Image (cartoon, rainbow, N blue to C red; front, side, top):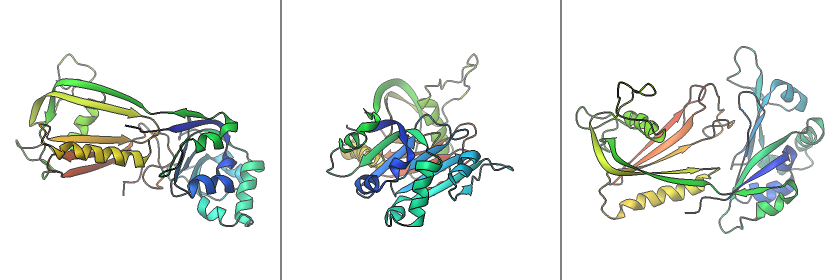
Length: 303
């Protein structure tokens, strides 16, 4: 299945994302995504472009003051505010290129505080040529990438027993959604699930009740993957049960970038230890499904 492509553009000036040409070509005619690459949310300036046209900047105190733009203190700054969040609506900004607001933002990024970042970029529009972004940013040494796909098979895997109608589980009959979530994390980390006394890395074991499955497949896709592609994959997984299968359920987990300035919608994403923000679908063979969403300690709860 095709997941990509996505692009890496190095040393891209931030003002390129607010030009009328870029907004008209990509933001208004599809879903455009951008995220700064190799930046740390807790110590660097980071930027994200959302598909609704919002440009979100997480800036340290000095950079924020130098830009002269209006923003708000980060809710994770602590007693002394050292980080600020700036949100720019590109749709609104481009509606009047002669407005004071557009001129001020353009001046800030072009002259007052020219900022450059390495950006991951992706664009989705039905029927559009994927090479448009390559040609548009050809002057900046753009690189095309495809997500990396790895497939592994685990044999004799002990799995929790689930019942689609029992989210909270039932003693001696079914495990809870939370127990499944913990178990999935251990499987993704390739941790041993036998709780052997000599294992000093993990004492975790599969929750009860459980069963041993002869074979389980784990497919991992790594890259800058768009929600539109994830929806297609989810539909494919649902079709897996069009014909009777021995498997009682399949699962799809999606993990966000730890150093993204946003987590859910436009909510600010904080980073302290793990930077988690992820969701997980469990699709049962009777077409019921569970949706689990999780974030780290420095985040608002998902919607």
